[in-house]
Length: 313
Image (cartoon, rainbow, N blue to C red):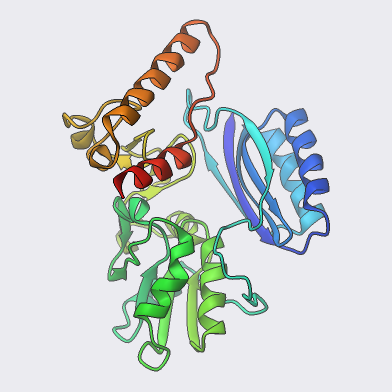
């Protein structure tokens, strides 16, 4: 049975490149698929493999990096999760862009039961630290969206919209917890005193909370080929636009603005006719590769999204 393992750990690493080589070799030997990011601040990844392979990786992560945050989930039959396995060295394991961030202190971690009580408190401002395309398909009651396209925009949003004198209690959440580690540290660095974060993120909350007690609405975006998971942590209803990454509902898939791998209602106005033609050619190459039984490594989705934004400006 193939499963998904998502993990992260902030831990000082002297040589990220050395760690990259070790993890790449291990993942190749175990037959994994997915992506692991390595930086001087730690490791972060989501990978797919059979249970035995992931157990070996999990033990290595614990022994080598003291990884505590490890989230397992099932992968439906026929879904590969990822096309390949790659370990990359990055400046940060989650891009935030604040050079002077002191992560010696993070927000108070609260479990699912405490979270329900916390977000019901009218004195608490509840912040969804994720990006717009994630928030569009699901979030918590009363959650405030920062309306970001990138987590690197979050610090500016905080500076422009939050005040430690006015917002005396702040609760935040994200998919698996990693973004809240940096976001909560940033708020504490800026003088906010009562900062809370959902322990294990949305995925842990859904696992721990009975349906009748859940304050979650909708589905949760995930960063693999499942696109989203429902409240039961099963693969959700959404597909993904390969041009802009936005999750798409059945109604959006039926829109005349949707063309597989080319455009959707969320990005059609942001891309030129020339760019869409390039996407069509890419899809043609994907189909040809599939007919030959090969895998086509196509245009990186993030680069495509960034290119579309440039063309729209």
